[in-house]
Length: 473
Ligand code: SF4
Image (cartoon, rainbow, N blue to C red):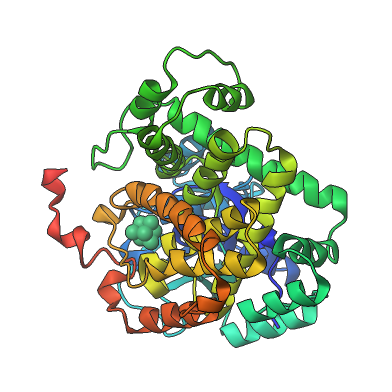
């Protein structure tokens, strides 16, 4: 049984990609720990990094090389000031020296010591090998970035074993039907069951503090995105759209902080068209911040980081003006659990399953969570998640130029709107009439992922990535 906390599914990090940025960053940190544990760290006199498969093919656009350097430099993705990122990398490039874990100075050539290999390693499409030179010997260690910032070594089987030893929740869940079984047996909502599991590994205060930190980061990423003008980095000349959209929607309202901003939006009159635009604006804003290497919450990935904040914000500013931390917590507990079921039964890695694994999963997470807040039963919550995923099945990943911009940013607004619609449909559905059980859609997603052509799995070798010429952008 793999026990995944909601805090594994919702992690604070830096854009643009959980698998290609946060994962390699974390892998570098893990490798440093390995070297320290084996008493080799202080002996290292040179390092090289090999990126394989999708990490190599879209690594430039996804800032994988920058993330590796940041990880090797000892920077922490949760707290490093995003404004400092370019300064750290520029220093390494110009000085051809890397301050290994912020401790030891090593010669390091950014252009030649990070190698982009086109070949795929057998276990997973996102492979990364670190090699340390110690005297005249080389020591290599390979990691796989399996989506959502998760890192594994060797085989998934082993990782499952490790997790089994590590901890078992009181209400372990692999399938949706198990989750419903607990809810029915204990007469609890999904969020209550999930909270009981979280309490087995953290106390109440830590859970609330962490949820508060996650929500604050989400709110700040929306706020930043809505108040930042200009174009995104990377060369596609993509204009930030959240700023203009927000400017029209907010009108003359005044505010000083993200929290005051939220209250100001509550105070605005909204009809259907404005609701669509607000939700899109929230989603666009997060992913524009993500695309510019800003801080966002991986939910469950960075490419799809805008869906969950947009739907939760929709609930807070449109649906329920009295909502507060209680509802935010409830929403994130349900969303995290639904995401973990997809991670266990299918994948949250676009390199394994295309965009259905990112936007599809985030929409399912958001739909289920919104459904519970709107009064849905546990059965209806899973119906909402099922509907949201059902209409993302087969969605390909084909980012233009390997950048998490087109179609990624806009796709988050589509995922958020679909999630809201899925929640509404589920609330009107009698569970006895359901034809597609939630667990079947998880299985279907995984089967579709396995049959999807590699070119549509985060390689930028198919779809929009080849049909749209960079010179058109
Ligand atoms: S197309 Fe979808 S899965 Fe691919 S990078 Fe963009 S958001 Fe992620």
